[in-house]
Image (cartoon, rainbow, N blue to C red; front, side, top):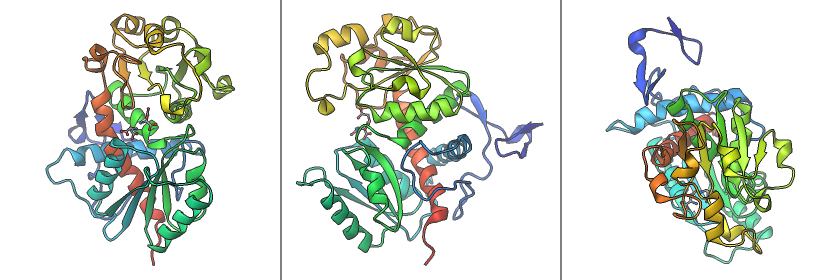
Length: 344
Ligand code: ASP
Ligand code: ASP
């Protein structure tokens, strides 16, 4: 008899095959009550989460995947609740993903795109927070171009806050969806060799992934030219490589990052062509990794820069799976925070 991640016994016929692995799903996200053990009121980053918090979210997200594949996808865990998506930086997929996640759980979702208004930092952010707070939302999802802005906002409002990306700091739901994608395709995270390649210096995706994957026991490498490595990266418990040949050797997962040209002041790479030549993932460089290595990218991709179309659209690419897992992970996060929403 097998034991589920929550310690219950599973009868063989209750085990469902999912993406090649067997995952345990009790009652497919119960209608109106959450059973996720998650002790935090906000999700501001992966930093500060315990391995068990992360695993609880991933287990719940597995259930949300099954729910999302049904014709009837709605639950009522957030019925009557208001979710505001506050995006100070343009986004299509993350915002859409949070919107779908909230709606599938029954929330009323409002999108506020403030990306194009003349927002000034500091005072205006706090003013915005006060205005929104007066509308009595239950959850605010925030993306902001400054590291730390989401944390600051969370101190000024009385509802739960989720970080949807703040500057080059953290993007916790991206790391969670990446972990879910890896766990479902490889069956585990512990012991895998995962190479995170490219613009690590400007990447909140890299930071959140390093924190999460090392917490769950993966061997994490970063691969980049010195100009794209943040100082102190070696203190994050990762191996540092400067060539794709070394960094990809025997990797199970190759995670590419977008070259964040909009966050660069000055020249970090000699030219895009040269960058693509040395660090762009093509079939040749992918052959340094394990024969069954899989490729990931958070999107949006710069075709022909950090990744070749043949790889991005090829059989080893998990890019579309990542998008599907994004909705599920965000449902799990919203569900987990629902315990902490005000009751009156
Ligand atoms: N930045 C990308 C987009 O706008 C993905 C994301 O939102 O995280 O689609
Ligand atoms: N979509 C991810 C982010 O918003 C990655 C990227 O934009 O390159 O951080």
